[in-house]
Amino acid sequence: MVGARFRAQGYAPATGLDCVGLVWAAYAAAGRELVRPTGYPLRGWSRARIEAALAAAGFAAAAAERPRSGDLALIAYPARQYHLGLLGPETLVHAHAGLRRVVETPVDAQLLAAAHWRLS
Image (cartoon, rainbow, N blue to C red):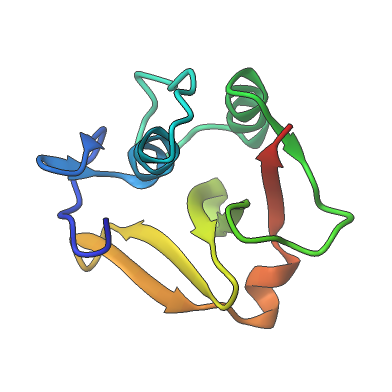
């Protein structure tokens, strides 16, 4: 899905993805249909609400463990803006609003320290 265009509330690679849509589309492509949150804003969701949505979809926090490929990174930006991405062995795949597409970037120490979630 790297290269797919960014679209707020997007959940289909053919028409565009946001960070939530990317995660749910990736798991669907791997044969795992998850309950997808709807009606979420681009900004302003509380961390508690995001974590509740992840738990409802079957994810569990794995913060005490080293991240594994396929884990979700829950990245906290300033002003309580949150972002999701999929961790690989050395990269993060995420829907980049500024670049208007899904990108793959190197994983750094700060990202490895971010909260991560995995399917339970």
